[in-house]
Length: 256
Length: 242
Image (cartoon, each protein chain N blue to C red):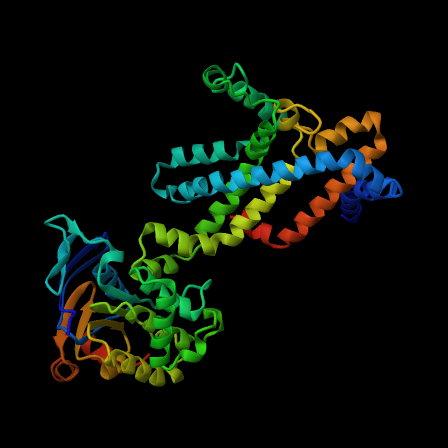
């Protein structure tokens, strides 16, 4: 038992140790200022935007799912399965699918381009769309669990104190579910920061426009390995910050 | 004086059916007694509009709150009915002052005015020291008293108390009973008090209604019920002290 456990632990921690050992610490400031900074700014900006989109769109979806107990069971299961799909879908497939929907000849993108000349793929907006696509399930599942966890007694108390459905939701249910919303948002942000497959497929890798940190790291690996390592260190630091932000809360949020 | 309740409540739940007529005189306190599962909580929830009636009607001070035959039903948040649940159910994310102010703000009172009114009401009930606390920092008795202040703050015509003392330690109950009575003294409406402790009825109620298996077994003053119990269950309930 101990040997496979040790191997598993090594497999999890070893790569991170290697990354830290091989990191070009001396040149790190220069690398960060040169290659990394534009991609870092783009990554943080798009991830923040997509996390915002996830919250704005995901909370209502979670509310609908949490209140869906009256739906027929097969429909409920189907909708939940569809919502969770991006969790298990290879991100590249997500990118291809997004192209087929929103590309210049896509299902929606075609008419959009014809009518307004709007083009989404290979823009910064495309990065945000790809990140929202992959991050949304984390937020929806976390928030739905938190909403279901809100004690009915408080909803009844609010009702008998004269609060209609909207007041009950905004003043009681949502504040009580706030830790779940925060945990879901942090997870969606983490997923967005690391997004590669869907982004590179749907948004490409234009420096300063769609080249986020993971894409930049992958491209730099051939041309400038030190830059790739530096980017990886930065991404690892972001991941650690996310981990600290979540502490023990994410398990509660996702366990439901 | 307000709070004249005339209710005919019929709720079907398969094996269990509530089929009871309740009347509460303006300004009076009626104790609703019965064993667990007798339908006390369902009756209270039905009057509050939290459980829809299958048949019957609820009329309060002449206003129809629900009438199944006429397909009329006022939603619970618009009924002049206050509810204190078994556990105080104070909002854990709000301090005591904001809890009391909550029901004032839903009536359109501005934030600051509502908070000042809440402070005044808490002071009246001797709870001013707790205004800034979170409910988690209150004892069970303190929470029960705050819950009553919160409900009465809206000046409902009728207040429904669902075993407000049941979750309190037995040795603290007499003092709390006195506190509840003091809070109800200044209240112009009527009250329906669910309990299975006869001492609650003794201390607080003008009249007792005994419910068993969803039906009213007997109603009257405590003395009348003791003198002439209509069924063995009445005798047993009046002897029981939990």
